[in-house]
Amino acid sequence: MNFNFNSLHHKSLEKLTLVILLIGLFVIAIYFFVFKIDWIGVYSNQNIDNYKNLSVLSESCIQCHGEVKGFSPFHNPQKIGCASCHLGNKLAKNKNEAHMGMVLIPGNSINSKQTCGQTSCHPGISERIDSSLMSSMSGVISVDKFAFEEINSPNGKFHIEKIGRSASDTHLRNLCASCHLGNEKKEFGPITELSRGGGCNACHLNYSEESKNELRNYQSLKTEKPDSALLKFHPSLSLNITNDHCFGCHSRSGRISTSYEGWHETSLSTEEVKKNSKYRLLQDGRIFEK
Image (cartoon, rainbow, N blue to C red; front, side, top):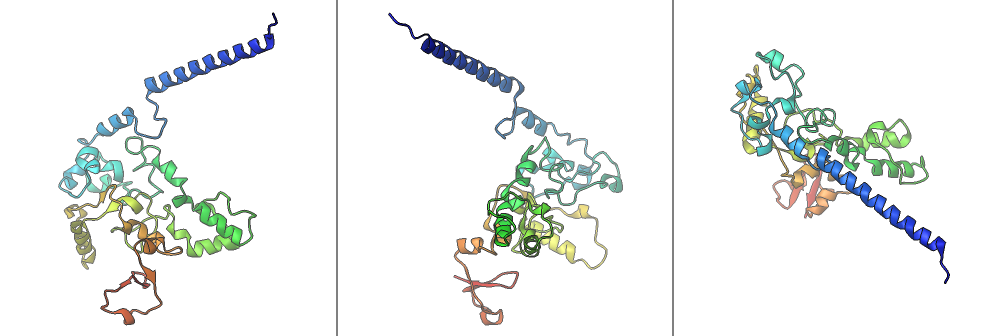
């Protein structure tokens, strides 16, 4: 009777490898369970506890802004305070000290790691957004550089904030660069057809009619403006993402937003389409029809 010792040895090694692998997977599973590691990018129990335990009662902000309305449930300052988004000195007892270091428009990429992306709220989201195509515009840059014969393939990896001064970079800077999410939103107000960038605000900022009217009235005052604490309606941040949020950046170039809604561009002038509901006059002056 002949024995194939090599075959038996090989099978024994396979079984040993499988056992070691199973033990390793078991140890890893126990490790993630015990330490509650947020390994798939969702909120761990620890993050939820941090959210619940934000110190709101100690914030002096609520003394002046406690009556403000309009927030989505998860951004209610009675639950998470004001400083979690706007920073500042939440323990100060007077206005000037309280407003030191305050971020007027949180959610821009430049401050998102300290505001929206902080550990207690949306951990890790800032890093994911910064590396996304809507922030990096890597595909747009690659194709543009390829067209200008600056690279040999349209499949390069780039980021719009790191472009240089080449011919294609100048072309991008003049025509396309304002649309990336890292472009800072510097003025109050809703997302419109002319909006570009704004970080988290680009998709998640929503103004109610009350907040739009109140802001419009406040900004129209010619004399010295009253204390902002008198403003009672705040825009909301939510998952209510509409076509309007996409339109500013995606209505040019490929005309994705306009095509999606059934509009095509014309060469007509404003005078030619006055009072004709068939046409749509955009804020930038372009005229579309269905």
